[in-house]
Image (tube, rainbow, N blue to C red; front, side, top):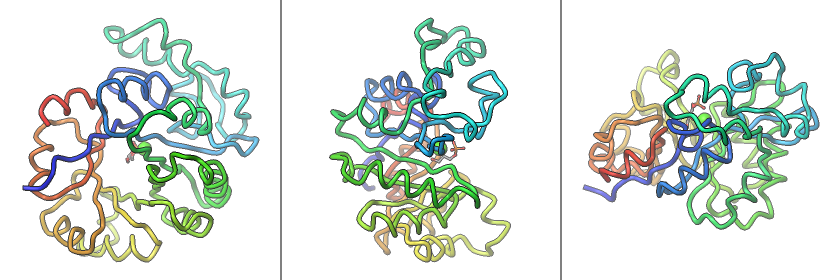
Length: 256
Ligand code: G3P
Ligand code: CA
């Protein structure tokens, strides 16, 4: 058995507060999470903002693309009311005051937090270079840099990050779709290495004892997403998984 996994709040404590908001990050940290995970995209003014989707349909309840609005405009858009409407039992009037945070504001708001910051670059072929550079420019001089892990499904974005900021920790993200292209899970490690990632982050369905063992032999930390079942704590200990990304850090921390 290895050490218990670190517990990381997926989009904050997103089971209990609107995802990717300051409220969700605060709740995760207050719950005792070892870190927070969040998604970033480029706003129209090139500023990295914290939001999962490419548009505001789901969390802003309006028809705008993130790339068409400036960070200032996004900073006025309510991304909490959708949660109150969808989860009335968990609703809070304060959530309706949550707006799209910038990356800079998020890091500033939690400057005193001593845990980890997993920053996921949500990028495509058109914007991954701009996003990688903008994020690196934002974090380069941050005192939080040693505790930041930049990650992406867009593996070329990882290479860009390594180019701009060679010392930052990076994680290559893999969803189950990767197995449409690979015969063996072990090739995941070669791909991550090829793009310069220092860690891997696997969807829970990709985790096997063999892959975990190879990662540990190569000294490549593994993070698993998104696991809300406390049974994952034991599984991670057995396999030597470093961190678990969960929507409900409080629940997992109860059994850790
Ligand atoms: O940490 C990885 C996980 O966040 C990736 O999926 O869609 O929640 O960003 P998604
Ligand atoms: Ca994410």
